[in-house]
Amino acid sequence: NNVNLIQPVLSSGVRVRIQEKDLPLALKIIEQMSIEEIEMSDDKNKPIVLIPIDFYDYSKKACFIGFDFAKQMGGRVILLHSYVAMPYVVAMMPFSDDDYDDKHAEKNAIYKMEKFEQDIEEDIAKGLLPNVKFSCKVEEGVPEVSILDCAQRENVSLIVMGTRGKSKKEAELIGSVTAEVLDAGKFPVFSVPEGMESRKISEIKNVAFFSNFIQQDLISFDIFARIFKDKKLS
Image (cartoon, rainbow, N blue to C red; front, side):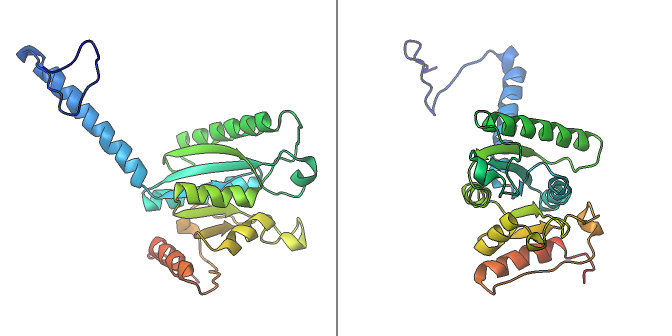
């Protein structure tokens, strides 16, 4: 072989000699490496559903729909939580920690996300959520900015967001953060009302599509049309 034992840097053209008796093991190793490379490549090309969460009930409802979207699309999920380390701002942000701690804001956010992740894994094990790949992110920043930045960075295919109900505040029928993300018009957004009972796409009977009649809206409509193509909606 042409391996330099003094400076063991393997080139792309390295050749290794093996004994005949070791051939089955060598082939098994090569096959396994090929499978792992394919899996890594597939993960990069899979559609991504981004679900911003704040650990309230409507975040969990968004997960039921978001994970089902990911299953239908053959994709994966990113759960995002953003926190604002400023006491006077936190109270204004639906997707921020209400329990503000000046010194431990990040630690608290990570702790809550880890607990939420465990809940999601348990729901998948129980069959309550589709078994799709998911990852969790905790970021400091204004929620709507963090959501849009993450969506841009990860090149997400869809954002699924829970919204507060009318009982919270009349002005927050949609939710200020959700409204900001919708207004940006950069990504398809599926908004899940707090009072929605459906946990699967197949159970959804009514969908309202909001549009500013821009090019991005046509792309969003096409995505939803393909996902709901076999459903009878009004």
